[in-house]
Image (tube, rainbow, N blue to C red; front, top):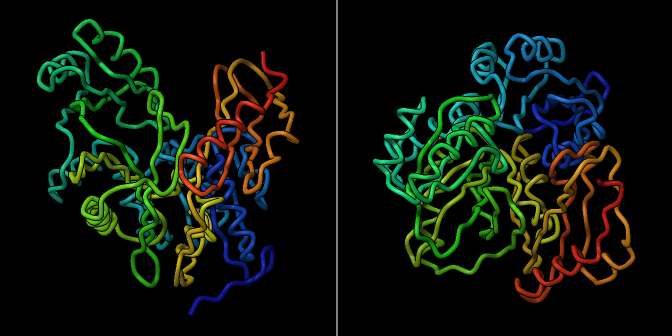
Length: 395
């Protein structure tokens, strides 16, 4: 039996969020609704999740000493990683000392870098994946590209939201792709993965929830990316019954191997009825923001319930839905959002403004959400909302 207390009182259940961006912010809000005391941690001050948490710290989360100091000071009931760039060996140590890491410290360790999770999926579980090689230096990288062949996809083994990712189309791109990967890694320069280019019809995120009552699968989410960074997502992604069953089987195997409780974003490529595993994140997924309008329980609400051991008897899907990222381009420390009377005039539409204080280059600062009779209609609606939205104070 799960017992919840009252925040800021001795009975409180305490959650410490490691990473407090827009996804973490929504988890914080869902935890707050259940009376949980939330501590938000990130690498910069006033991150979105910090703005709604009870307390916050900004530290270098790759520094195990700083990480341990905050955790030992707060003594949380649950440690919830929201990003990859964390000193995961310290989390493994803390779990052995009695702390609870979501979903597990080993899951955070394996998925922090693409090498750990790819070796688990392909070499231990035998899941279908693209051909791949890892390279720790430039010479190994050139050899890997030659072995895999072009075109191929290059990614730092630790990055997110498309940072450091590129497509090597020919031998002429090798130097450029290596430089992009070295500059884009979350922990700085380092090892990369070279993946064979997959011929696929579409790609999906299959949100998978491991909870007290078992494992549940959400409706598949389709998405469009540019340089690995999500732009639009929609739910449900139409797919054959056979492909859907295979996708659920793969998601069940990889999340079962990782263990623990919580939501996982399992990314897969689909070609006809063939399903190929790509990546998995043991936390809410950016493409899953569409669930804030498509379902009664968003991916964030499901994550909170699963973490706390609460039941998830059903997940009510409301209908075809779409999301579109709001991306600010330029420089600003005070973005404004205007023409909202037009943006939100249609029924079954909403938006989220993340509260990110600065933009230098380009940055995702919000998301537009819509529901309609079909996925295409929902997508048309969020594109119209995007056209109507005016961003100010960006130069």
